[in-house]
Length: 334
Image (cartoon, rainbow, N blue to C red; front, side, top):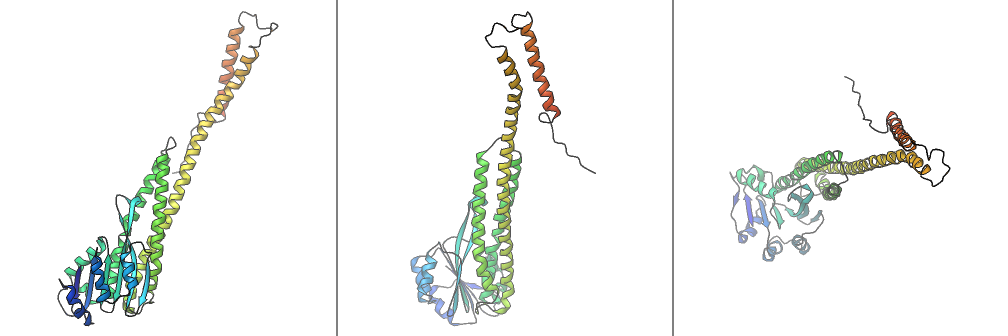
């Protein structure tokens, strides 16, 4: 547990306080206090109940890790649940991490079971300069949320690269590939999950940025509106990627269908060429004695010649029609 305290006029933010000092610190409303609880134990939860006097349901929600984003206002403080994202290996396997906030008159409490890069970045800023705490706990909350939303961007960038590569692979496809279809479906599920997560948090940031909570000073609203606008762009990008992956699926099915049509065209031409040859072979293969050409000396060679000429004639006809041996030429005007 890390406790940061900023005193008005101080040149730096103090830290290293103990839990026993918290009650006395909280009595001074001029201070800005940040308590970060990373992977807390059940004993640490007593701090929330005994020192901060939070509602028991808040402590229960903090202990659980599978809550949807929400914001609830209580007398003297506001409770938030937000989700951060981080990629394990790539965007397809990103995970969400729950981060709980409590914003009070002179304090911010952050509660999380996993390490957050956004929290670590803000800690570095707090240690480097007291400016981060001079505007009060609401501004400190803004800095944490801003970092939290910023880490959505690398996941989106990876989605963009994956979709572009996927489209190239689809149009270079020679034969149906189930691995590409599986990748399309996995990307689609991941994008929908990201869209669902960001969409649920939009409502919370909208409420904060439009002054629903009196605990957030009116001067802080433009900062939260900036985060809201950023998250709107992220949500719109996720929606666009969903459309792109849907288009990639349609392209894959179209390419596979075209390859199938090419195969069927070859088989159809082969069958069409063989049809008259089969007719000739069947005609002269009948077991009748009174076939005029049956006992002619050169009958065999004549029939073979007719069959060869027929085959070449049909292939020439198909070629003139553009059904075989045709290439698509693009005319470019310069």
